Image (cartoon, rainbow, N blue to C red; front, side, top):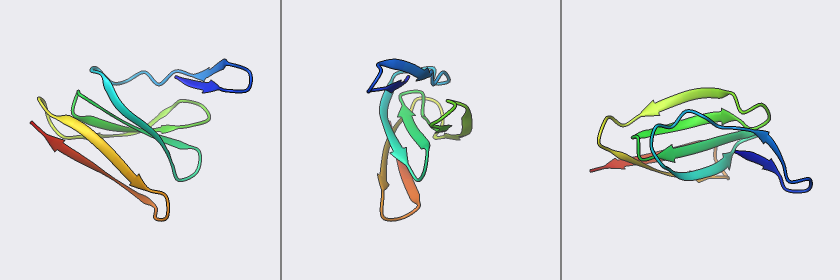
Length: 80
């Protein structure tokens, strides 16, 4: 969920992962990158909560995400 911390109002729900979400981070602009135990990383519109893209590591994998704010990229690592 995206929550406005000033009003404690739910702005959007990020529905799409089928497993646990391990990480959620803001990346360039109003976008959120999440990674989960379903082996996917998902890029979301941080204003509307709309899913923009799914990156898949395959079944049985966990996705761990990191990003560098100085550059416009993020990396995911998948492992058994």
